[in-house]
Image (cartoon, rainbow, N blue to C red):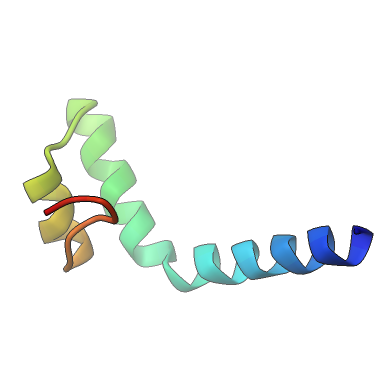
Length: 53
């Protein structure tokens, strides 16, 4: 069980590090306006968010 949790944590870290620039753009917009629409998020990310469409 411990190995699974550690591997999942490492994978999560890799995903976040690989998406850092996108996450920083999203954070900057949210700091300005507090909310963004699905369309705005799609523009920032470059694709539709999971579960949208």
